[in-house]
Image 1 (cartoon, rainbow over the protein chains, first blue to last red):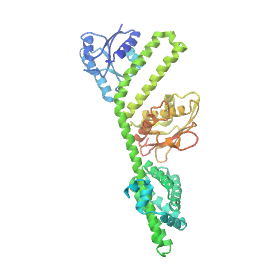
Image 2 (cartoon, one colour):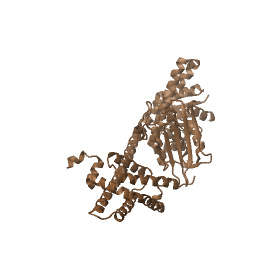
Image 3 (tube, chains in turn green, orange):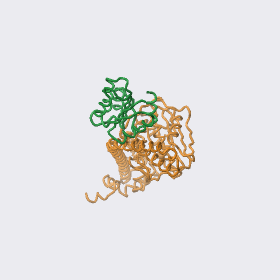
Image 4 (cartoon, rainbow over the protein chains, first blue to last red):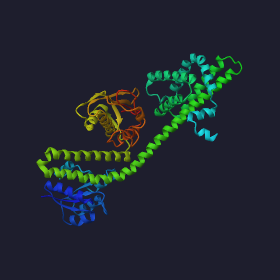
Length: 115
Length: 390
């Protein structure tokens, strides 16, 4: 079973995303910040990372970059209500896919299925 | 004097300033039968000068047919100018003409020069056709100068008013933009929670979610979330003010895809009359949004039943005109001037953003969007300027 770490400072949203992914057969963990997520993702951790971009402290793209520095095989998706070019470019540069909020769960599934 | 002037209308005020009185009106009426045979040559000369001038002729996009129409209008304009009555109704009529010049983007300097051209020709008529007895020539010439000064003042005042309205709207959009950026983003998170909880609720309820009494409410939550997301999306679009990314686009295909996006009710029939080979240099995503907004508005005005017509034709020399009209209740004359203002809405559930966004997009394309006054339904006319090959 594949595992996923969901990072969002809105706990309800993090839980809901985790629950939806749980229904699709993922083992899920959640975190409210990048600082809280890092120890759950390094040195070992879930194969998938779904993170909000705007987080208290380190942002989602930077979190992805730090995780992928030592774990190149981690698949990451950055989600954000901010859909400006800079946010999207930051996510892509870190090696993540980007999905706008509100999250289209169909699109999320397609990305995960392709993983 | 100062106090008294404050109670005068703009028109009364400038009449007072140039010294225009009932005697001036009488002098102009006296000139009318004398000047009448010269109206046509004056008008011909007027438009010949415009056609010869590259800057001035840019404001005319409809070719000879438009010039013929404009000449008739100018004859009527001179008719009214000499016959009067020079009352508030006269002012309103003249102000409308002034606004037309703003809309076709006639540069201000041509208002001066064009008015002067008519002044020179009319004064010529006065001096050559009237016998100079006891100051009659002087009296009528003065009245001609006064009325043409008034005409110019009205045009400039209207121009200023329109520009100010435009600036006010831009300021309002900028303010909305700042709010939108912060509130819109903040609202997306709670909406995301509602949306994902709804999704999970449906999963957990399984067959029970299809029970009519449950489904009705789940569907309501779902459709209201969609509507809220759409409002936020429109707000953020207004705030972002993205410049158009133009590419050659088939207008016919764009109309079809906009109709799909608008999710028109089954009893609303869309009649499309757009040449298959008409392509324009436009941002397809933005113009699709404009069309979808117009279709959605029309469908709502039709209360789910009626006809929408989309007609397009190329403008000779480049660009195109596109009309979207319906057979609904139409837009009242009072609302016509305001429907493009941000936050103005006539709908119980409207955000007042759709048409403001439409206008911003069309203007960013260098085009115009306006409402055509008609008694049977609403009609929006979009003109895409030419000049760039599609």
